[in-house]
Image (cartoon, rainbow, N blue to C red):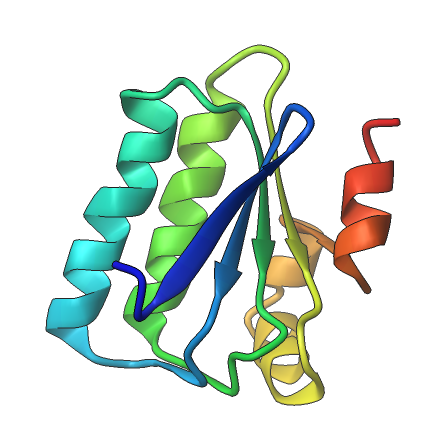
Length: 117
């Protein structure tokens, strides 16, 4: 999975940094989704920050993964999903689909971590 995202812990926050400019390939995304869902389901991580700084292209399948993670975390206590470093193209897509009303989006990773402090 290291070619799609890098994961790190910053205190109690699990930061998922996507390291590829394109989240479009259906097979790669299916594997990515399974790895991301395990972070919540098996490792019980509840405070997740998804960093999209390097991402330029996002498929509807990738948006579906983000929404599924949001739904999983919403059903758990003391949990939250925050997106950060969303570029102008992706932000336009998020606003067009009105997901900016549903998802918490912060300008930087530092600002996202600050939400809980």
